[in-house]
Amino acid sequence: MKTRLTTYPTRARAFRVGLVLGLLIALTGLPSAADWLVTQSGDQVETRGPWEIKGKLVVFTLPGGTLSSMRLSDVDLDASQKLTETKKMPSAPAATTSQRREATIVITDSDVAHVGPEAAGSVEERQEAGAQARAAQATAAPGEGLTVAEWNQEFDDAIDGVVLTGSIENRSPNLHSEITLLVMLYNTDGSLAGRGAATVDNVLLQAGQSTSFRAAFAGIVGFDRPEFRLNSASLSPRQEVAEDQAEGEIPADEEGDDDDDE
Image 1 (cartoon, rainbow, N blue to C red):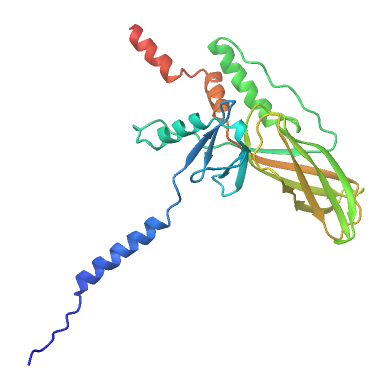
Image 2 (cartoon, rainbow, N blue to C red):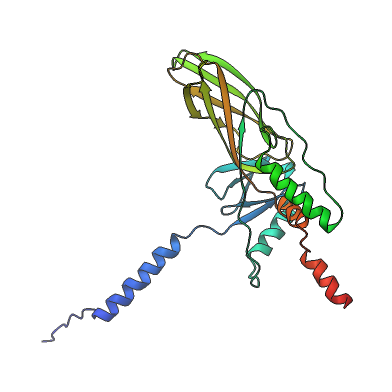
């Protein structure tokens, strides 16, 4: 009569199995590699994971997790594919990458847009222009860049309150994404009647584009004036290049040319 022996994994083997399972779980939880879109105007848009063509739209997820889309005619598909492949290639250690700049704009009902400083020629002039541009940005009048172009008010019986609708325009040369709008309502005495986040139809706007918004305030039957606070992330790398040149920095290709001349 044969005796069947039952073997049990040793403690070391069980530890190795647990370690492998833990690594597999950790790897599956990692975010998808970023892809890139290039617009016909040359702007570059980073996406979370791959983008997808659906009819006349290119649908994608922004780095912040917001689902967005662009017209297919506005996207350079060949350039987008090349840029995505280039970004995924291993690269040599580079200089510290500048973080994405956040733009916050507060807009009141009486705001007007202003024209920014013109670019200068020499290095000294460009440095001065860069300093002036940063100072102007710190004290810029609301209405530059993203702005609420128009708004309307109506009463909604379903919520027993007012509803504000209107449009947001991108009057800057840059591409803005993850656009949010906070609406605040004030009474005649200056007190806050209510505040709430508006629903923005398209959270990504190229230069010159516009989108609609809607903000509902249940229980608020009237107010004196609104205030709009727009927040967005600029995705245009051309703005960063212009700022570097305004500070007098020499692009890498020009440095290479100087070395060749020596």
